[in-house]
Image 1: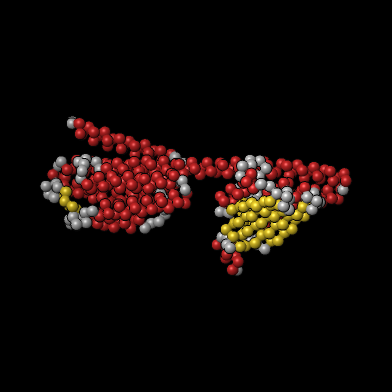
Image 2: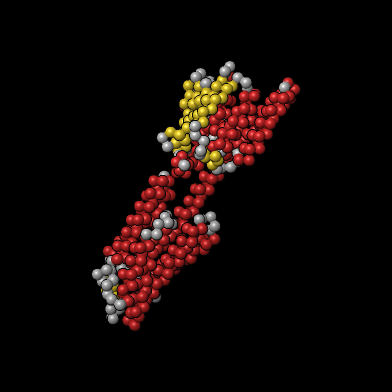
Length: 420
């Protein structure tokens, strides 16, 4: 047994062991998307078969009595390699059009059974490429370009460096195919086979990194929501209960009315405060209105005017109410005649919510660095962007007042409702 044969056996065992270990890990990894895990597992099995069949083909080259078996094994490898790339593409998109190229490739190389259109194995066991002999390479090249384009699109959408991993894999496979076609290297195992094994490994890493990214983001959102709830709820509940307690001694009827409003606030809204999902604007507005009435009871110098032209849309829970709360707590409570104007309308394809007050105002630049006083606004801004693609802007002039504007893109269903 010479050194070359030793190296060949070691390389093949290395590839097969990598694929076996990867298959086990993919099978037991429940964190990856179920459908993508299934596709990747299928791909690993196909690549495993390519490694085995390729070596069987090499063995057949040494025996002139196995011409037909060499023909079948060569045909199998030519047919399956583009399928592997198609499955890589399927991890990025549900588009089924790449399968058309794989089917065309299959039809071309199936002709090897009865013609030399794609290739043939001569009686003396020599490989002879036919006029369509490079179909596999052309189809694989088109599929690799397709894979790169999809990767670039995903990078533009995600703006994350991990999105380029599929493109890097496609380039590695393309380079290895180039080495195989060039004939510069005399090897018993193709560079493309090695590249496919590497690609499967990196795709697994890519899928797992996607899960980690989504998981970390979910934890971050949950943490922010918890912090926001801990800031908004305790002081409001405590102050309202304190007000009711004080009114019980001075104005029992007013205390009774306030307790009724407070009970309605809790009954209708408190159950939705810990949900990271969109709710109807009407529900958020009711939450805000009841909150405002309670605060007006505590601070009679405050007046709130509403101009609601648009209420047929959804938004994240705790969007409007914290903005109004900030306007009251940090703005108009110090005024003898504090006013807040709330308007909601549709404008240029957006649901626009504006909360304007004549409070004390503040330096907007400090808003970007403040970690406490305006934490609620920052959290609202992040949740708007994450949950519905919305945005929040703040304009403020010291001793004049503050305007907070929320813009939520109109959805298709909103447009259909308007038409009806």
